[in-house]
Image (tube, rainbow, N blue to C red):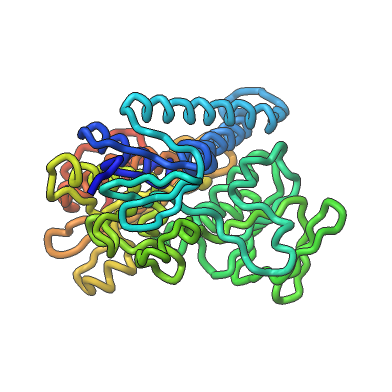
Length: 447
């Protein structure tokens, strides 16, 4: 059978681009179809611009703390519009760098939408592209609730389009997007209310993390309404009137939906050619990122497992190594994937939670944990606590879970994730000299 390409990628996000470039570097003929800006969610309306906003919020908090360190700064105004302009310009530069990288690897980039019409063919407008292998890397998009007046809100994509910081914001959700944007908006001057359907925040993480974050968010000015559901939204002038299921009325200038994400799989032709998907539309793959059709593969958020940018990149590169690099055994190990939440304060987690460990190992589980106020807060009137937990199993006390919330958690996690993946024990941590004075040293001095 005659093929124009060896690999055709649907989606120019992190996973799609990483797979395409690795395949091309192995000598494969590659095409990539993308209807939007290169870089996908992470670069354009996700990780990158979110982290820049988080840095701005950090600076705002440090300005507030400066007096405690002897600086007489006075009142400092924040120019949201100027930050947005500089942030968007940086993202645009990244779009260009992605394009340059694809061109360097001689990848054919096709602008527009593609639709799978058989196991080896994608239809793009009036053209048909044929490849030995197809990769579905179309990512995901924000989920919107189906309630009256939902259209009067915005989603996380809409957050990055805001031209100014709203005065009163209601965020609906309890996951990482909800808590991250709550922290950013509150630090930059908004009055923030978070409405969560359940009783806990970050329910997929160790309970200690969500519980501590809830307390700290409330202590620092965010109103959190738990166990509540929004029934309807009405627009009154420029104000949103929110009616909760219990009849409570909440008013705000900006309503932001952070109620999860759904895969971009419905309009790709996958169902029509028989690609297996779950009820939510996630493409079903085996351990090798291959669907029930041998020539069609999928990586990233469209798969729905560990929806993190580095996971999509790693899975895609390993797939390309296997298909075109002669590395038959290459696949991604989904165990011990480190994850960070850029909340205020940040969270780091790798391995399994205490609850998961006890369900698997029962009485063989030993927990070590601590809470303390970091040295940074020693001269400040207000304090933020750091909490840490090690989840250990067996007589050797292998560390199967490591969880931290507090300043620096995001940066300290990477090194500890290496240790956990390598099978470190509590004794290994105990025998490692502490770096003093740091927050991270507490992990190697726990008793």
